[in-house]
Amino acid sequence: MSCDVCNGTGWKVGERGAERCHCWLDSVTTRLMDEARIPPRYSRCTIDNFVLYPNEKLHNALTQARKFAAAFPATAKGLCLIGPPGIGKTHIAVAVLRQAILEKRARGLFYDVRDLLRVIRSTYNPVVRTAEMDILRPVMEADLLVLDDLGAEKPSEWVEETMTLIVNTRYNEKRPTIFTTNYEDLEETNMDSLKVRVGFRIHSRLHEMCDVMSFEGGDYRMLPPNSGPSDLATLWQRNKERLPLPARTRGPARAQLSSGAGSNMLQDSQNRAATERAKRLADPRELKWPGGKAGRG
Ligand SMILES: [Zn+2]
Image (cartoon, rainbow, N blue to C red):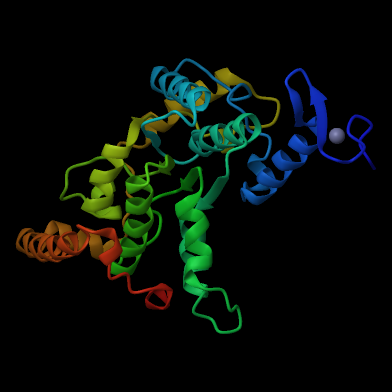
């Protein structure tokens, strides 16, 4: 149906001459929102409809997110939201992304990290016929990127190389990224630490390019229907009592960790390999990224 204001031209006469009609702006926003890959369950998330309860670090994280969204794109740093599953990290990340699209018409993009890596791997499939760069370019070039669940993918050299390529490119181009992760900054010998899960290069970049916010809380997914904020506080309290330290790593990694000599050797070889790779990474154009095919299986 044609617009009454502009008769479908997309232009109208405003106070300062020709300007874009609201219908044209709305269609741009709709297209950007469609292209952002926001999962349906988060499609209505806003900063204002986030359910709060007494939780200081959560309040601080939300305040920081609100500031970021208001200032975007004039933001020097992205956000990194750290904490256990279900406490609202993805809601906050998506809320900021949606606001940037709706209010600033940003080219925004959401990716669950495991999905992203799976899609890059699939580029090797000759039936799919997508080039790796067709996937990677929008990820590297989005005005605002959300990478959800960083560290969830089993660490491997290919995963680390691929994520480093993405993160370093965005860092060099000064494009903000919002990360969420279940993995915290623990001692370096802990196989569940963020540094071990993502590799030391991405870890140090994260701290350079993001305001890092760590918080805990009640699991929103455990909330029964018709419950309220006070129930979240109760869930949080119960979690604290039940979980001294989440045991996320399975057998072999823990076994490696518990044998002292083994873990030192592991650490040494990891450091050597990482130093070699860091040298190659001095110039991102010289990154010998092995490509999507290397990540098969
Ligand atoms: Zn119009």
